[in-house]
Length: 446
Image 1: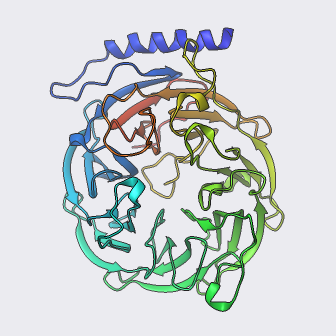
Image 2 (image 1 turned 90 degrees about the vertical axis):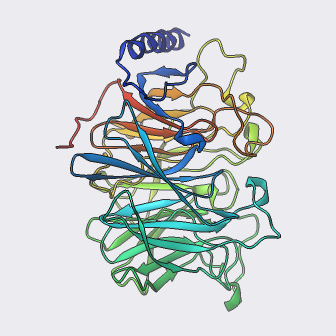
């Protein structure tokens, strides 16, 4: 109880501190009603009424540009975050109708955006056409992306793709003849006007065209993203039901090195069963997490934790992150009772970007109705929660999810090398935060 009271006191002090910060003329006011521990908001943008989703960032000279996808609005946005106290929504680029344009990844002057049919529960119309695959953009002019090419997956579209720079992009893609969800497709983008598929990998049992059969009561599917080792020879991914490591020395023939199954016993919800895998190559660790799927925790247990990969052939679950608890005084005894989805979603995953903070002792993880949580993994056997930020209660519904309870639903997070934390919420906009707790990494931006 004392710890919770302390958290509330710190939150109240943070409110007073932020109120004292000078706000630039014309800046969108930070919505009131947020709660925090060892975290404070410094800026906010309502994004022109288009709440953002996936986030990526690019520094050009002395300017910082955030690129976002959208859940409820078909297209992408560019936000100038050079002054984090006054983020400026500078452009909306219309996307493909009736399609998810929610995912974006980039490096250098190439940006890859995903196209995927929008499900009816998310506002799509099953009777209307939709787009699938990827669009490759030239962003050498950061405010005026130029489309270079498109690639069609032929089935279902792509989701959380990764482009770490160089020759290859790694796609989470539907594929003709395969069942159970997306699989890994390796794409040669060295000629971005003519991308070419060079390799693919799927869980055994997914190749329906070859007569394979999936295991019953087992979730399948690759949510993405894939993360490649610094030497470019090893790939780590959360591919339900397993954490999988691949040898990609020959990208045309990826070979499995090792795996660790998570479902069962954890949540069984397709590709969300194991949603994220963030390797910490310097420590032989992988941060793993599922994605909450159903409102009010009406599903198997969601989780986040650490896996030891010193032996790539035999990864082992090392520890689990503590379950976030509500602040004192809330009318519910746990976040499941609050409504909406509660559980992990995205980490600060775009670490291949030169302008994104590299993983240290702090792991930033969104938790839907519990906002953003910060975990200290200095001791990987015993991770501790050291900070959190919960946006205010939403005032307006922008889209159909969650269908029953209009509550906070924070989904993506990105941290830049200045130490600024970007957090979205599907019924608010873009929050920009600072972590004020222990083990703060030193900014590395020059």
